Structure formats: C-alpha cells, structure tokens
Length: 485
Image 1 (spheres, rainbow, N blue to C red):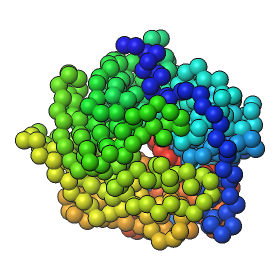
Image 2 (image 1 turned 180 degrees about the horizontal axis):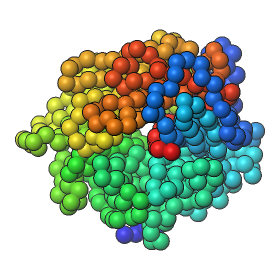
Image 3 (image 1 turned 120 degrees about the horizontal axis):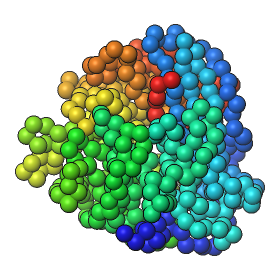
C-alpha cells in the first residue's frame, strides 16, 4: 500500500489562493433559524438542565454524546460551508431523572492554526483555505466535527478524510489523533462505522477509487485494514452492512479533480446511474455490483439479509447534490435557504437474480436510525427526522416508519423547533425491536435554548415523555451515540 499517495488523494491538500470571505449576514429579514449555525466562542462547563415537560422514564440512564460544527466565523476570514466549522462534542448525562450538559471543542491542528491566524486558513470540504496554512497531512485539516464513537474506554471524534481524534469521555479533553497501526497513521476513517451485535466494528476510509476496509474489535483494537478497489470514485459518506456483507452505494457524484475546496472536485453524472457494491466480509475479493437509477444520498439505515439471499436496507435519497454544493454554503453564510428537494425514505432490495427494487416510503426523511441490537439482522422499523412547515432549513418532526405494517408514527414539534438526530436506547430487560426510547436534542427558537427530548420509541405520536432545557443554545450538531454510565 502506497500510504503517501492514498493520503494525498484522501484529503485534497494542494495549497491554493485564498478566496475572499463572504461575511456572515445578520439574521434580520432571514429568520432566527440562523441560531443553528451561530458561533460558540468557548467550551461549556457542566450545567444542570431544567426539566420543562413530563418525567424521565424509570430505567433511562446513560450518556448521549453528539458532535457537530460550532465555530464558523473569524475576523480574518470564515468558513464558507456548514461542514467546515470546528468540531464541538456535547455530553448529555441522564441519571436519576436529571440531565446535565457539558461541551468542549475538539483540540485539532486545524482549530489551533485558524485560532492563531484569527482567520480560517485551513481548507475543508467547502472552504478553499489559504496558502498561509501549513499542511503536512490529512490530520492538519481534520475538523473532527461529524460524529463520535466509543472504543476501548475512549471517545473518538470522527471526520471523513483523517484519523479519529481520541477524547476523554468524562472531561472531553482531547488526547489526540488515534493511530491504529504505525504504518496507517493519518489514513481516512469515515464518520459512520457499522457495529455488529458482537461488538465488531467495520468502517471505511475512502480516497477516489480506493478504500481501506477497517475491522476493529469491541475494544477498539485493530483486527484488519485492507485496501480494495472501487468501481468508481463516488462521494461516500455512509455505508451499511448485513451479518455477512458490506453494502456500498456508489452514487453518480464522482470525484474527478484534486482541488480545494474538496466539493469543487466532484461532478454530478446522473446518466451513469447508481451502483451498489456488495462485498463478502469473510473474503473482500468476493463482490457483486447491482444497478439502479441515479440519486444522491448522505445516510443509510442498517441492512439485513433474507433466507433466500435478498439484501434489504433503507436510505434517504435526493434527486441531486444541490444541498451539499449550494444549500450548506447558504446556511453558514446566513443567506435565505436554497430551495432543494427534501430527501425521501426508500427501502432498497437487492435480489439474488440481480434485480434491484426500490420502494418509496412517502416520507421526507433524514438521519435514519434503527435498533442497534438488530444491526445486520432482519427488522421492521426505522426512526428518522422530517421537515415540516416553516422557513427554516432544519427538521421539526420525529417519525418512525413501520415497514411491515406500512404505517408511520409521527410527532410534529412545529416550526419553532429545530431537531437533531434521534438515537434509540433499549429499555433495560427488553428484547423486542424498538422496546425502549428515542433520545435526541434540538433548539427551541422561542426559548433560544438547546433541549433534550425522550420519546417512547413505540408511541412517538404521543409526544415527548420528558424534555429538559439548557441555559445555552448550541448550534445544530450532526451525529451522536448513547452509552451507559
């Protein structure tokens, strides 16, 4: 494996001239949804959240960690894409019916360089950066701002094109980039690992038409890292897995130019359709490619395999990458939201005879989540967030799609709430699918505060069982994980 060329392709690190910054627009005349992309200037010390609705269910205890961009603007130049803000990890602790919140920026090389310059000089997904940035490898541009995972007693902050960044799960102090093997230092590690019921972790690191397939033990120790060839250089933010296979959806948004910002190196080629690559976990050389119509996506649900070999998975799709290219730029610049088609939830079936069947759920949806105890196994439910009324570009409904009964259980918070991804937490002693709670966060625009909500996962339409409110509004985060105490 040529690590040097792999890393170069992964990060797109060529230094380029600095593009003039587009100043952040005041929210007047646009809407107070811009609170979702407002800056946080410092870490948030532990604080007790106030219970504002209901009562915490008996048995619910643990820690919800969430990650997302939280610093976008600097006097000498700002990011020009939502995905490029400095990562901030939030820690919500629930115990004995009470909730606390703390938050801390991930201490990355990128954040240190931009802070020293008092300007965003580091290139990113949609930010060009400056020649002043000293870039020696992928982790020099690592924003550590997408997701988190627990591994071997550590909390890892995840990006896409660089290493996991290890943090202390209690204090949120940054320990530094995680090197899984000396010769693999700085290799890309996606923000959406898949975890088997036995705790085995699968992940990818993508660079053009090459990918690293990572396999880790439940303790975070490296078991294998193999480089495979891909049929095309698709943008790959997420993948899924059954008990026996990895499933990679290769959309027709193709990386064909090594430039910065990275997003400018992609071309939308719908005429080529979408390819779905299925790889045998036990033998990565055994693979099969399925074909379907063109679509764009960020996120997939868990996959499973039927007795006859049919593979099924759910996915949230859009007709094109307009939000990734234009919408996320307009948001962080405080401009009116770019009109894009809402993602819709689909169930895709890959049949042994080579047929691909796509079922539409009739539901606008993002951030699909399932019961993690059924990862890779047959299941019937998918939780997601939906769009409702109002002018803000964030979510306001919590939905659970029951594929078997062909129905949706839904709760609409209304346009004055901006929701973040819900995660499933099993009820102690329960074993049935979705026997537990959906736990998630959001911003209450009227209170100008972050809130933490708990739903009965099987009775979402009844509304939150309880809600807590913080004394601060944290910008909208992307992904999280719930762990025990």
